[in-house]
Image (cartoon, rainbow, N blue to C red; front, side, top):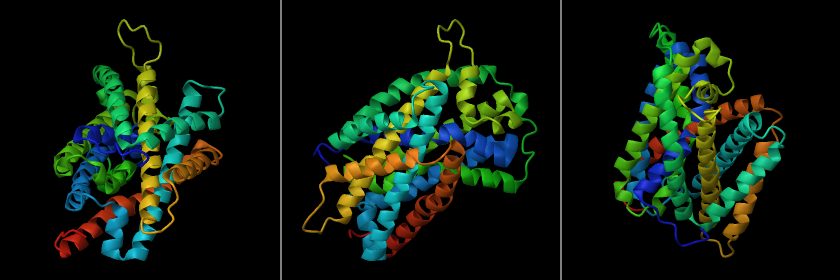
Amino acid sequence: MFSENDKISIRQLQALLILDLFGTAVVTLPRQTVNSAGNDGWIAVLLGSAVMAVFTLVFTILGQRHTDKTIVELSQALLSRPIGILISLALAIKIIIGAGLELRIFCEMIGQSMLFRTPIFITALAMLFICAYVSAIGYECRARTGEILFVFVFVPFLILMILAIFTADYSNLRPIMSHNTSEITMGAWKTILSFQGLELLFLVFPYLQHPQKAKRGVLEVGIAIAFFMTLITLLTIAVFGEYSVTNKLFPVLQMMDSLQMPGSFLDRQDIFMLWFWVASIFASVSAALFFVTIIFERIQYNKNKKIPARKWIIFVMIMIFLVAVLPQNVANVYDYMEKLKLYGGTFYILILPVVLLILDSIKGGKQI
């Protein structure tokens, strides 16, 4: 974008994908699936995450066939230029809205747990400026930062998960399969739509050092996320029980805070989960700033006068900020996010990749 240093390794892609895909899902998904499938919510998460892992193959097959193309070029070549531009612009809007809503949830969480008197707009601006700086330097800088963050946040996260495994009350999971198929299916559907970072695979392949190795790497990420999201949901239900989970705004954070680490010098273990959440939001917002700018740049690729990338990133920052601060309360944010997942997620995660892959296969998967 602003730097030519924009090629990343498969390992760096994996670290970024884990941070991007966990995002809001790790905090909100247990409550959403329990609302649909009760104490069988963990089964719904397992099924939905498994489907998500399989769908990563659709994205990677398309990307490996056209390693220098993004959704902007692919959609125009396979669906016509007007439709392709419309799809690309709609994706940019979806990413902006999704990043803004996630940023608002992050600000609410920080406000309720740490910065009690800090206005939401201050927290949002601080995160946006940091993300914009990293994105402006280049994709590799973002990848290296994400790689470092991943190491520092995942180790304490795993420690807390192990502690929760030994302290949970697994009787709260019984009776297993007590809900009907339609309820579990609805929970699985919500799980699939929760992984909103998946559509970024439409945009990442031109920035990979070895794109032909991406299929295995991305599939490994999908399987790892399926395992950990299922484990987190299962432990949340086991610790609190079905009815208590549905009444908690951030059940995963509250579960972490309820854990008692032997000999711990920390009064609040949820600080580790908050740190993981900060890293995830950093990854999500910086990805939005980088890739939406890329979409706008590539749409205007053939025009004589191109708007500089720096102006685009400022514009995207303003849009994300407005989305983050305009909703009146967190209930409205969740409502908007559910609608975004239902319509935008269904189209860009489930429908569009399959349609493009079918059309590309009809054309023989040739370079376009």
